Image 1 (cartoon, one colour):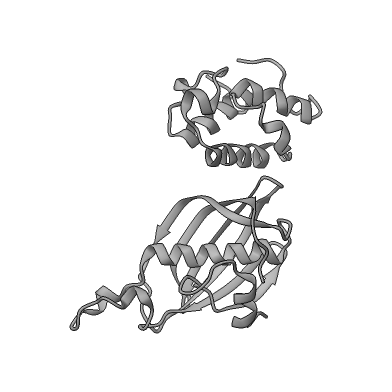
Image 2 (cartoon, each protein chain N blue to C red):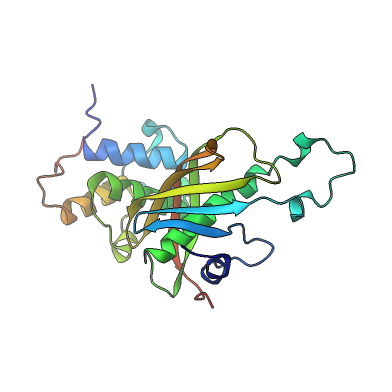
Length: 151
Length: 90
């Protein structure tokens, strides 16, 4: 539904922190987005030669950030805040990490809107790799703050 | 046994949970920011939980004056029809 050029045009983040590739499904209350993990990403740059596969587990912080960017896209596409505002992450709770994703895997984030008001929006959802859940997010809360519009 | 659906108990519980305190540590008249050192993000968390529970939108401009359990309860009473939220404090 959205290719990478469109995703990049909507996200406020800039390289190297654009952690989404495409959006496959969208409704005003839900969104499915993907991110392909590559061994050439910056998080693997300083690993020593001979690092075993376990060392290439995708960092949990980046996994949550990628999920959060999917929430940000839903916020934008669903018009949950005016164009002159940006979604600021307030907090994440009830996180559960399952199996680790690795280079070569494609993350699929399934995001759902739980609550929306002019003060805050709350999302929930999970991330999969080939049907296996790698992350559950009970609650991700954002607030709308004044900020630059996407170019 | 306390009625967990009573608004003051509900608001106190949400505030305590957000500020990582026990409910009996919360004074219903104390300012969240001045007394408990809550920050603006804590307040947004509290507001979001209350909005979800009571299915009401709390106007941003009114929240500046609603920084205690009792003040929030007063705001909710005013915004709701009065039948959805009891008017007597515990």
